[in-house]
Image (cartoon, rainbow, N blue to C red; front, side, top):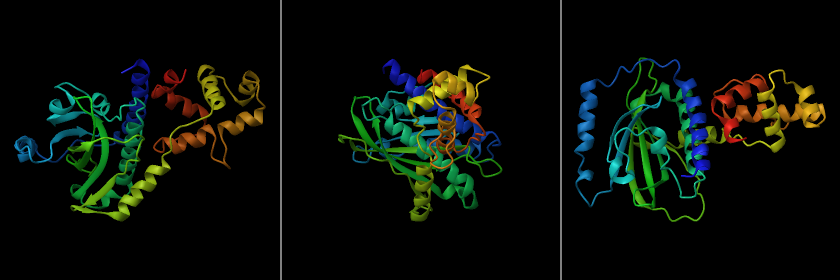
Length: 294
């Protein structure tokens, strides 16, 4: 990877895990499954027929905690050349179409955010263990080729309040990726092994409500001014950037068109409370946005 690709990957992950840090702050310790049940699950995965039968779809597995800890993996070294000790950023860097733009990865994480928001509002009313989430996505393999993969995610560990602490991902290899341009990803919700149309549509609505944080060059300049000047306000910012004050104020917050920096930050990071521009600056500093956008 080039230095620019690595920087872009870092900011994608810092953004996502800033969301996760806020999500899990009130989660408790896992109460299920037991250690013995987890060991039996790992044994079952290792002994699956698909691991020995060349006529069955090839699969690999990853058990990860929402907070980012990897609990178990199987067959990743075979397909992705990831040995023991890898982290989630290394793993997810394989979600790639070969362009180095990380477009699929950014969309994938947006869907993940929407999924967590779905659970916080809807999912906990039902039997958590009956949910499954499926998505078809491209991954770069050890042979240098890109393959379409079906990822199925199921909740595993739960705390006493039915928060999902970890989940098991099953990745089934489908076919070679041959697309000439990006195809939209689509997450599906299944419940009790049946596709759930209403919930899947609701999830899509949540996903499209989380918009990319795409701002204009002048808005970028405003953010940088506020970051480097602790006493910044719309007056001295307007004087420094040579714009009328009312224009600066509209670039910061636009209640009519929702195109102000604060408006777009709220749409891009719905889990964070932004009361003013300095709140936005503090959050962007946390995810290293300024370092990438200098």
